[in-house]
Image (tube, one colour):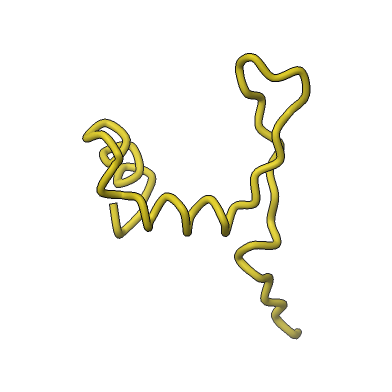
Length: 58
């Protein structure tokens, strides 16, 4: 069996956002990259939630 590797930016999720008529499409790899590069601006609660979700850099 051959394993398939997917680009981190290839996966997208539709997320409901308050005030938006339609769901917003978020590319997971882009979100992770942006969140990681801006982690110094995250609140303690946000960092805690990421750490509890298993994010090792949080």
